[in-house]
Image (tube, rainbow, N blue to C red):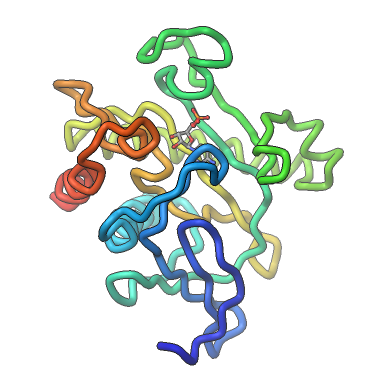
Length: 235
Ligand code: C5P
C-alpha cells in the first residue's frame, strides 16, 4: 500500500500511520544489521518470520497479564499496535553468559551465572548503545525512577514467561533485549519485538545457535534457524 504515511524507519522495521492517531502499523523488513549497523544484509523472509514469531510471543505474554503494544497481526509483514513513545533504553536480561558480557568481562560463553543479570543500555547509535545504570537513565531524562522500577519488574516477569515458553519447545533462552513504550496516558507497556533478532536461543540438546548470531558470526543457515524457531513456537 503506497499511500501509507511512514512515521519512522528503523533498521528492521517501518512504522506507518493509521486512521486512528492512537494506533500504528509496524511493518517487518528483511534487512538485518549487526555491530551498530556496520554489518548489513538482507535475510530472505526474515520480516515474515519475525512478524509471526513476535505475534505468537506477544499473544502468549498478553495471556499471562503482561501489558504490550500489540493489538493484532494484519498480514505476513504487518502488525497493528498501540502507538507509544519509546523509552530509549535497551533492556537486556542474561540467563547464560554470552555475547558482549562474555567478551567485556572475560567469561566463557555458556557459563551459567548464580544470578540473572539485568542490564540497561542507552538506545543511541551515535554512542554505540552504551551500558548505563538507573542513575544515568534518570540524569539523561530517559525515564523516572518509578518507571525504571516498573520496567525491571515487568522484565523479570517476561523473562520467567519466556524461559518456560522456550523450554517447552526444547530451546534455551540465553539472553534477550526488549524495549518499552509509554502509551498516551503514560502507562509503560512492552513494545518493539521479541524474535531471533533480539534473543539468543540455543537448542536444548545440541546447543546449536538458532538466532541472529548465525548472521553476526557468519555461521550460515540463518533463514533455516529462524524457520526452526517459528516451527517450534507454533507447536
Ligand atoms: O550483544 P549482547 O551480548 O549485549 O546482546 C545481548 C542480547 O541483546 C542478545 O540477545 C542480542 O541479540 C540482543 N541485542 C539486541 N539489540 C541490540 C543489542 C543486543 O537485540 N542492539
